[in-house]
Length: 134
Ligand SMILES: [Cu+2]
Image (cartoon, rainbow, N blue to C red; front, side, top):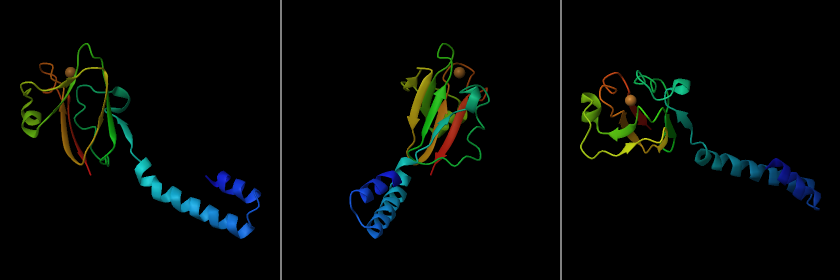
């Protein structure tokens, strides 16, 4: 961005004009920044989506628009977005949409999101996640 500002200065603009251009470009960069800031998180960090993933989101500030990536072995696991009751009780809602690519990305909307692995026993073993996006 700054390089582009200097480039137009070489095309005959006065030094003051170039300075103004740099300031304007600076403002554009700053105002565009919030849109470009969506963060991407790998659930469970290097360990991925696994048992005991439950506490992973603790202490993280996750925002609407951020992306969660669930990385796991799709032969033995999956991911499903569920409601609070299903999350708490580890019951799999009938007809729930299961993601099982092994690399599923979910863009979060504002609010609290609940995910479980629907394989028997896995959610109860902590393969569940509640995330609040602000
Ligand atoms: Cu599982």
